[in-house]
Length: 170
Image (spheres, rainbow, N blue to C red):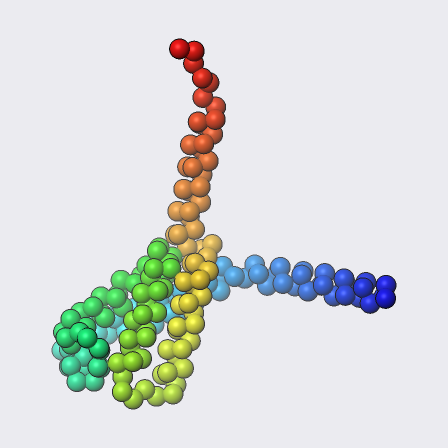
């Protein structure tokens, strides 16, 4: 019994050391995910801007965006594909921008009557990566992280200043 416990303990220690090393990659993978998906959407938005007549034609004839007039859908979709990826790649309002792109991604998939299997798989990959950012935030290499750290420092300084004030006699 003692041998099996020590074997389990040793295996657990090895596992934890490996897991800790792998966990150090989390900020890098979140950064890579933000740039991978962000660039895909940003370049799509640039294409729409560069060929605006084609964009309007596609939104009128090809895409079936529910509930919106095609011109409004074209403007909103293009704006989202330009602004949200920039925020996502910078890591500014990471969760908001990832959620916004997640919704754009869903609308893109449901707006196409026929979508190729490879294109559908790409949209699923983007959705998965975007949900990771929504759940875990932009990571250590995001502006959000710097802002959060600065706010925590400011809060700590504020509490320290309040704690060090000497009460005066009235």
